[in-house]
Structure formats: structure tokens, C-alpha cells
Image 1 (cartoon, rainbow, N blue to C red):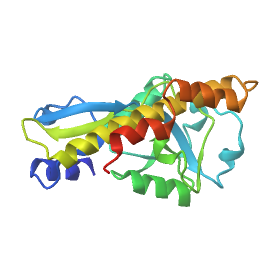
Image 2 (image 1 turned 60 degrees about the horizontal axis):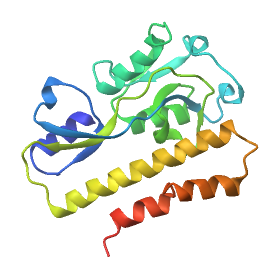
Image 3 (image 1 turned 60 degrees about the vertical axis):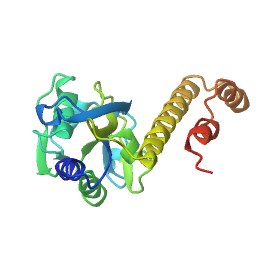
Amino acid sequence: TRAAQMQELQQGNVELVIGQIGQSPADRHLEMTELFRDHLVVAAGAKNPLARRRKIELADLMDESWAFSPLDSISGKSMEQAFQASGLGLPRIMVVASSMQLLRRLVMDNSFLALFPSSVVRSAQGVAILPVSIKSQWQPIGVMTVRHRTLSPLAKLFIDCAHAVARAVQARDAARRWAMASPSASRSWRESSMAASGYRLESSMAPTCSTS
């Protein structure tokens, strides 16, 4: 859980944590740098009948069984804001869990629905992303370190790599959205355009993350 991660960071057992960053009085001692903002998606088990639907409104899912993060957590507040952005109250919450891994397992093995950052479930087996438009974004994802604590060279290198990967992934996702909006464009033209702009994942990562 985030609380356990923060305890490990404060005690010096780890030098940094990558996760959701927010403005909390308890985090005043932390240095936070944003990596990216992830979009929220509604996920269901791959065998859930809803996974065969082509379009679903969030309001249509209010009476389904939902698994949520605790509402007093950063994740839970983001989930609640997703419904508020559509003018809705909270859905029928049947299970509350602090672990994203547990929430994902509940979705895979049961008939629960849950909100996730798209990066958490985009390639997950046994999980289907439902065609639901979510109007809010997930809390920013970033690197957290203890303010005024000196980082090791390895930790600094890791942070540089994390920023390089985040930039590359954002560029890739932007290109993917553009390609979906322009199906007539050829794949070779898209690849050459990305390469010319320095958006190839390999070239974006290699200069910063190479340790040899």
C-alpha cells in the first residue's frame, strides 16, 4: 500500500518511490516530480458480458458491483471524482481494497468492475477495458524522494531513466491516438514521422538509460 511505501521511504530503506502524487499535509517532507498523468478506464473481467458491448455510459453501470480503493486514499478520491465529473454519485461499492493488484484480481475472477489507470490494465490478461468515456484523469504519477536527502548515483540514474521512459511512452500513446483518428495514414509514414521527431521508444530510452 502507499502508506507502507511511504514508511519505507521515510525510514531510508528505499531511496525513492514511484506512484501517485498529491498535495497532502503528510507529504510536506517529500520532493515530488511528475512523470505523467494516466487516464482512468473502467475494467471488467474478460468473460464479463459487458466486455462484448461496443458503447457504455458510466451512468448505466451504477447498479453493477464495484471494487474501490478506500475513499480517503488518493486512489479512492480519484475514483470518486471520475463519477462526480459525470454528475453521478458513488456506484454500488461491494468491496474496498487498498491494493491495485487485489482490485485487478477481483475484476479478473469475479463480476466486479473497477477503475484503473490505463497503464495498469492495458496489457493485463483476463481483463477487458470497457468502452466507457471517463471525463477525469488519474492522479499524476511521479517520483517521490525525501527532501534534502542526498540520492545515490544509481538512484539518480534510475530517475533519469524513468523520465526518459515516460516521455517515450507519452509520445507513443500520442502517435497511437493520432493513428486511430487517421486510419488512412500508412504505417510506414507514421513510423518515419515519429522517428524524425525523436519519438522512437528505443532511441528515446537508449541515451539516458544505458549503463554500459
